Image (cartoon, rainbow, N blue to C red; front, side, top):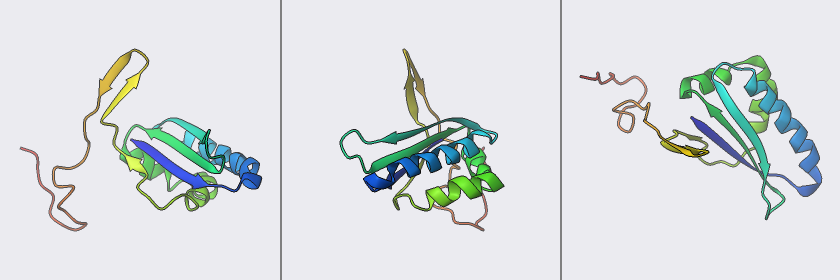
Length: 123
């Protein structure tokens, strides 16, 4: 699972944002299922920042959000991110010379079922 959070940070606040983003990344990195994370700033628009994290599964990311240190350091930062989709399934990747095809972990009825509906069983 890939989580991409984008931020609009005034240039004068960039150094402070970077410090807070590093603390958020450290809190995430301590959680089970964390694979890697990065903090980036746009080369063209210095006020545009991104925090990306990669997780073994959507469950590991969601469980990490309930951790105390993540709530203190990451959740407060993520609350300032752009209001847009941020969690993505990895459907393919290219890591160095090797291409890896992804597979979905979504339920068969993920686009049609709401919380409380009866689950569809795989046959």
